[in-house]
Length: 314
Image (cartoon, rainbow, N blue to C red; front, side, top):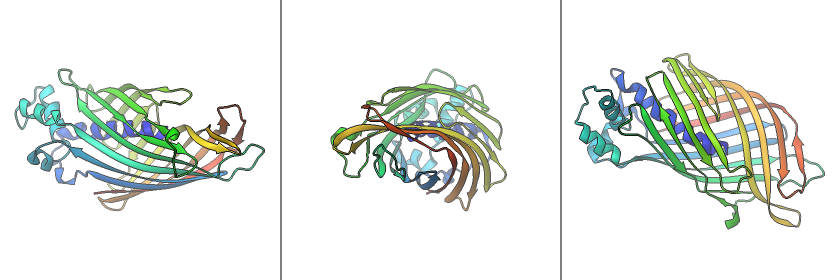
């Protein structure tokens, strides 16, 4: 679940960054990247996880618009909504945004379980996901944006997925940005077949200065401080509520739920404009596995977690 909601919030943050940068002088649009690939590993007591994700942003613009970078039409619409002098006519900006900017992504997450006990647990849990999402200005409403996405996914204990392990989560949200410092978010994410299928998306993003961002949105809230052009410090919190279709002894296709909460922080280092890495550490607690059919469950001990994520943009 957390990766699905993260996708929505990540889209909003990228969009927010584009709009906030609209007034900055000397913006280098040729440094806007459309491809992103990342991989991570994470260790926690009794469980370690690994995964990867690739995303590509495609804008359905004419070749001239496409060459100017991802944020051009967004800035034009933002300028127009604030009665500023747009670089082209409002009708051209509207034409550009009508050809939606869409982000496509796919990824794989795997949780390896080293937990022994009276209740049988699979050796690993696997999620394969794809995603399509977009965020655009809502015309006629100053500073209001609308976003949404859909994520065809498989959640199972094997890589040879059965059709019954298929899920189709989706989400939608509105964002209101009264100025460059504040963004307010509200919406919902829907996870079919989950025990609790509807989850709210709400919160606020506050950027008092260029170096400091408070992302207090309901899922994965974090605080980021830029020390310099290469090094960032961050504090984060997150929760997991995922359900997988697994085999338990002779029982086939039963639902196993995993939950946890973790809080920590870390440091991100930017090696170049194409590559960065983040090291995280903190505490993880309230962890459990539970079968929905009444087949029991298992608590997992709390403790220390650490993780490493590598990201490439090109």
